Length: 270
Image (cartoon, rainbow, N blue to C red; front, side, top):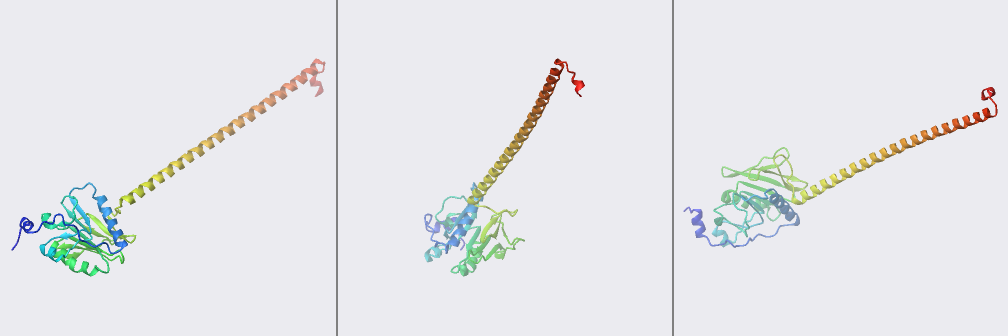
């Protein structure tokens, strides 16, 4: 028997306010990695009203799952073409039958086999999630899969060993020991904190350049003033020499006149 989404929703209990039942992250490295990815996604998707992103949030998809308490919450998932409203959990029959379009699991020693086996099969066959990635913050193991003809096929890396996500329109790759997002042109997607640091560094560099330009201007001004002082000093020395020459000539003329007044011809003294 095949049920429509509406029929399924009518047959299921109301769990619209059911909280997520996911366990905490395995280690500080897992928490930091997840927070990093979410910060980047939130920033790059800022202003979008047609996409939902979640971290460590339970996905409820069947009554049997509720009965068995077999909760399956991806570490990170994305659903497109839905409103990004606040949700305590993702309840498929309250979301028009929508499953995640993108899922990423962070591998750990206690979850690795499940993430690579049971969850991979669940996301492939039940969720039919178009893209599934996993990454280990400890060993840096990284892989991605795309749903093709109902089966997950490995996504081939590019020349930089990055994997392209058609759902996100971004590359995923390892950078400085962390899984990061990259734009199609290879540019690293920064977190708001990294952007703030980058802007601060640019502001400091601009300030340094302005200070250097000011210093150069002041040095040029000092050189100009020194040149002006030298020119004035040279002019003063020239005027002093001219004055001395005039005074010497005047003294000589006075002496000659004194001789003439005494009836002595200065020429006769040569």
